[in-house]
Amino acid sequence: MLVVAPVVRAQGQQQAAGLPERVTIEFEGKDHVQGMAIDTAGRCIFLSMTTTLLKTDYEGRVLERIDSIPGHLGAMTFDHEGRTLYASLEYKDDEIGRGIARHLGREAYRQDQSRFYVAKVNVDSFSAPGAMQLFEVTEAIKDYKTRYGCSGIDGVTIAPKIGKKPGERRLYVAYGIYGDTTRTDNDHQILLEYKLSSFKSGKTPKASAKYFIYTGNTTWGVQNLCYDSNTGCIFMACYAGRKSSFPNYSLFALPVAQKPSKAVLKGLENDGKHFCLKLSEKAPGWYSGAASTGLCSLGNGIFFLSSPLRLPSGLQSATVTRYHWQGFDAAVPIVH
Image (cartoon, rainbow, N blue to C red; front, side, top):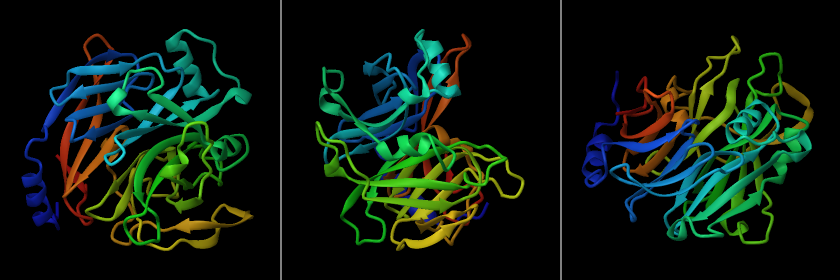
């Protein structure tokens, strides 16, 4: 493996003082981990276990939890400045929604009941009534019923506004995309951009931009988004696609400094022009599926990934492991 950033790795190891190397979460549930975020000031880890939101310490002990969430809680990101956790939340009628309904022992949702939300959680009053607020993602609800192979939403991250100078932060929400190999309208990842100030109580946020990224087919679209200040990229972690005409990578890098261009989408030539973004010229993508169930960057080349851990009982737990950036030219750019 070619390592092109040994200095970044060394700096990252110095900055990792006080951060855990590997944490096993003491939790038993039926559903696997979907996303993860870290609060370094509070020395806490947040994990989405699909229908449960956990807050743990660095030793893996569960401090607080929100149980029986009647939907799919997915990827998450932590705003260190606002002491706020943002996560994707879906209530829908497809096979994922039906499976969750079975686990919870409740009736499945109909298509007209399907809804997608950004969940906003005050981490300092984590399990108190009203700590979690839901904000409807209306654009995804519309597209779920009509186009782009939209299966809802999943990845979320906070990053600088795309194409602008650093400092003006935005919340980005990624669509889930069905991996149907017979379609031609499902080969782009789709990001919605929101002002953080849009997420205020009693207000339905409106996306300030919608971007399309041509990656080729993936299975369920972006599972986790993660902005890394060291590289200046948003990383998109996916389950690999199955169309033989594409390399079917599972991890992509999207530079935020680029200016969007307006173009006709491949496979959607009759859909008009849309704002498009390009993947990093340094690497078209990687075969690196480990990040799809939880990806978090703390800067200075330090990443954390969460992974499912199947217990002897057949139930699910999770591990959180520290990784380091190896460089765009590495076969796997983020390694333990």
